[in-house]
Image (cartoon, rainbow, N blue to C red; front, side):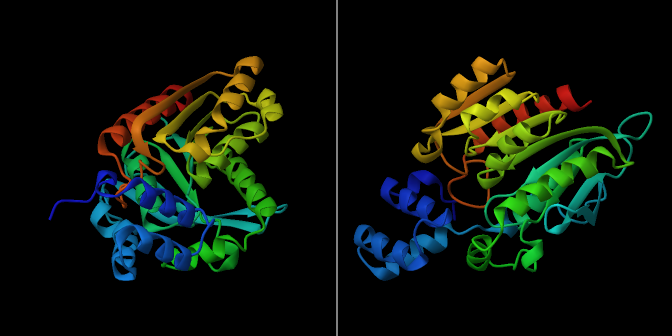
Length: 298
């Protein structure tokens, strides 16, 4: 059976799914509204099932791949929740003469550290980086293994403390003996917003790559020192609405940035576990991301 793509769904269904993913409507509300489009509750339920992430099918790098080394890793976060816990992946063999690795902080979507984000960390390790993916849900027991439960837990986080955790993670990674001291951040959806936020808060952040992330306040752009590589989906009114004002602020502040909008793509186009995935756009965005990190973290 061929894999479903965004083109297999009516635009109204994708908009409803985006609202559901971001907590704007409940599962029940999605089913009720989608039933009016699909013709029945059963059809609406099938639509939601088909849009739900399929982690095993999309996995690109197995956890036991001999080319990488992975481990659980924790760092202290005195001002945040107390401790940052996550998943670390790195090449099994040194990629340069001194063995010090460029480091990337990976910030997940609004579901916590699920198998897809762990796979992203492993992909970065194959590209020669030490990647650390924290789990914002760790203070609440960690990613629960179920996307709906993760969605519910995410709304219970103290976002102020969570943001301090991400700052603490950057600082810890800068001092990590295995790293070269240069840390970049890549984030997706919620994580894209965090990547933008970290760029305003960490003056010596080496690079930031937000994927379809919410923008910080325009006034905060003047604090950004890290070179930005910004990815937007073509069909993403909610996020894209904030870009013109943000770009104006970046230009006024003299921030080094590149921004790309991928025509015809949906929010989440890089996530290959759902039908919103766009293979061509994801590959191009990923290639640009790796090049950006190699340039600024080496």
